[in-house]
Each structure stands twice: as structure tokens, then as C-alpha cells.
Length: 160
Image (cartoon, rainbow, N blue to C red; front, side, top):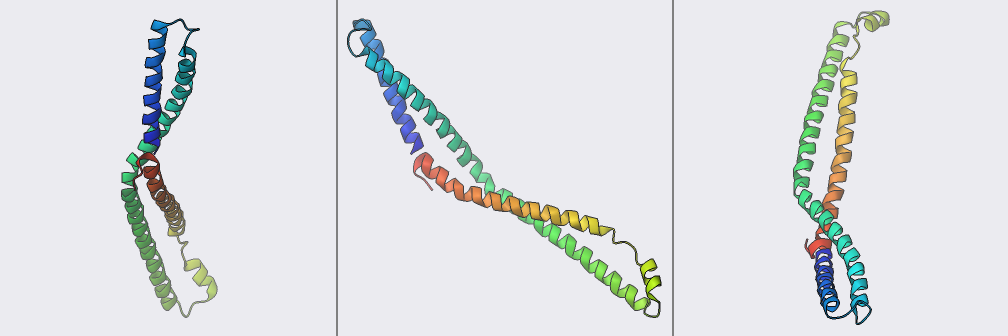
């Protein structure tokens, strides 16, 4: 649709320029419709420029739309590996905790606290969860872009 208007306004602009030049050669500027064609040149020149910019911004949107599915797949693969890594970390921690409690049943609470190491991977897990949430937000944004892509295609050339 936008490209159709761009072509239409460009044709009217070219027609106006040709007619303006024609009337300037035949008549003085004050005679005839030369002033009318000059106004048409200015108006349709501005409209053509606006639709030119709009057309190429939509072309850029449609052009980059082919990579959206691959980006979504990449983020989903990264999230799957993060889920697997977190799962392994939690499972290892749970196994360690179970074995420690099993070995130290007779000990008192103070010994348990002194023997239990800090879970160093806790900060790692927190960072992985932050990355996971950021990836989910990016996937949501890309899916919105994918929805907007069909709208941009329709605006550009009545397509889907």
C-alpha cells in the first residue's frame, strides 16, 4: 500500500515537473498554469519524500523479519542449556546435602554449620536465572516483532 502511494506520488511529481518545464519554455511564469505546477511539485515532492522514507523503513523491517525465527530458536536453545545447567547444579547440591546429612547424623548443629560449605554456585545460578529471564523477555519481544512483521508486509505490498 505504501509502495503503491510512493509510486503514484512519484509519477505525479514527474508529470508536474515535465509540465512545469513545458510551460516555462512556452510562456512566462506569470502566464498559464506554471504556478499551479510549481505548487504541485512542492506538495508532491514532500509527499514522495515521506513515502520514500516510509517505504524503505518497511523494506528494512520486512528484510530483517526473516531472521526472527532463527533468533527465537537461538534464545530457546540457550534457555534449554541454562535449564539443564541449573538442573545439574541443583541436583548435585541436593545429592551433596543428602550425603552430608547422612554422614553427620550423630553430630550436633554447630558442627553441621561449620562443615557445610557456602554454595559457591548460588551466585552462578542467580546469574543464569537473570540471563534466562532476559532471554525470555527477548523471545517475547521477537515474537511481537514477528506479529508486527505481517502488518509491515501488508502496509508495504498488501502481503502476508
